[in-house]
Length: 269
Image (cartoon, rainbow, N blue to C red; front, top):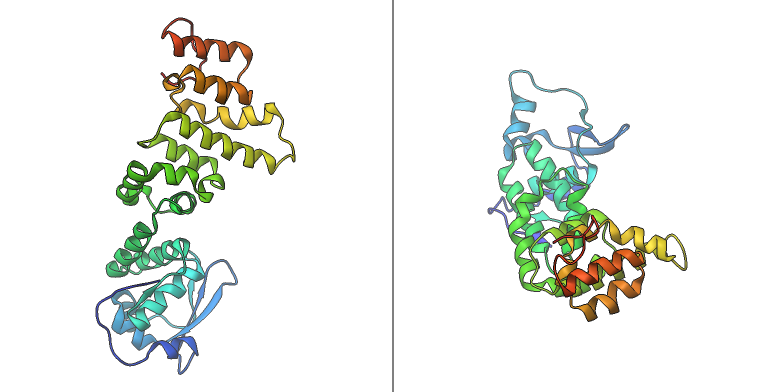
């Protein structure tokens, strides 16, 4: 998918990058020994102020340029943009890696294009995948709060039913639970149970009640169990055996009559 950028030169400069034609500078990017990229000082300098200073400033840089703090995929995306004036991203992860390179070299236009691509990628069936990627990147999630919150407010049911929810990390599940959703708490709880079953099945072919209990209890503090009806509680969490008999009794008692018994510590009022 490509993002629109300001009109650039008509000359097909990208082929010179792709085929390494008439290059005069090389970059070593990423962890040592680094991925090697061949490029052209003049083209880079014409498209980017940082490169202009680097190659034609008062103390021009000579030899290979070492860039250990960027990912090769991000630098590749950045170079491609400079040569073609078109931002192309295979996926959200590539867009975020490219954004990091654009930030390093102060290309605010490309930063904006990367951000917009990620925002537009946030849909019910991809939201949890995007959250997983954001969680392991240096990118502040707050930049995407608007798109995340709008998707959860309007299409939370589709998010909970998505394949990316089932395969999401625990951190992402918690992030979804902590945000406003216009679905019943019982629907949320059923989706968490389905997620926990899949997670536990990766550890054991037939997950034990204890394993399932352990996986779900880490998330229950974000669930309003007292909003369930007695029938939903009995047919759902009580039947799943994720509570001790005493815990189930205390919760059910409070569902029927609030304050009738002390609640377990993990219960959200």
